[in-house]
Every structure is written in C-alpha cells, then in structure tokens.
Amino acid sequence: MVNFTYDELLDRVYKSLPELSEEKSDFKIPNVDSIIIGNKTIIKNAYQIADIARRPIEFLAKFLTKEFGTPVVVKDQTLEINSKIQKEVLQEKINVWFQYYVICKECHKPDTRIEEISRGYIVIVCDACGARYSVKGF
Ligand SMILES: [Zn+2]
Image (cartoon, rainbow, N blue to C red; front, side):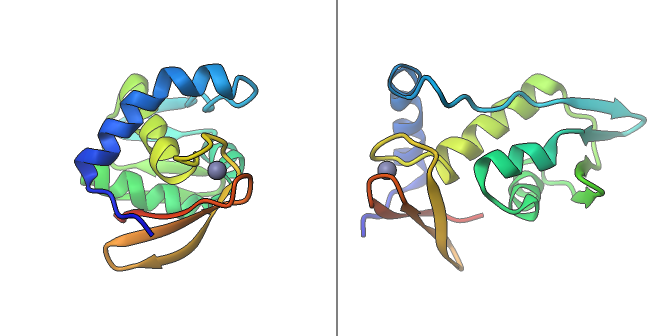
C-alpha cells in the first residue's frame, strides 16, 4: 500500500487532469446544480452526484463540511450548506472529491469503492484495474 501526502495527491490530481479527459472520455464529472437561498446553499443534484460516484451522499456531505468548515446536511435527496457558496466554487470541490476519492489514481476510471475508512486515511480499491491504495481521510 502506498501512502500519499495531501500535497503529493494534489500534485497528481492536477497532473492527471488533461490525461483523464483524453483517456476516459465517456466519464464526465457531473455538473453541480445548486441554488443559494437566503444564507444557505442547496445542491439540488447531490444524490445524483453521489450515485454516479457510487458513494453514500453522507460521504460527500462529510467532505464538504470539512472543506467549507460549515455544516452540510442531507435533506431529502439534496445537500444543504449552511453558507453562501458560488456554483463555481462548489464545482471545484466536487472535482477534487472525484479526483481523490472516486477516480482511480492508476487507471483513471471511476469504478472504485471504499474498502476501509480509518482515522486519518481511506483505503480505495479499483474494480477496473485492481489497484488498492490509501488516501488522506477527512
Ligand atoms: Zn484502476
């Protein structure tokens, strides 16, 4: 098992972006559909995003809670963020989430699952190429 630091991962994320779009043209990170209501932001298609990622919506909620430093709660099939967040900023976070926790770092396919979540790290297994690696948790 190979461990990567946050910086190394970030480095890989950015380096792998152009490659990804060429190699895996049939997979596209979904666009965020969000709306700001009062002081809150609703991700209207959060359930669909989580479904495409094959992750529980709570896993995405937890990540965004950490990233924004404000509560993100599951409401019906949406996520409600207790803050005003522009769509572009949200999309950036969703892209990072996919790159770190969904798309395989070896074959760049999204056919991964989470094998283990421990304090501090998450073990990801790829069903497409068999890669198994850990990333920093949140
Ligand atoms: Zn893979």
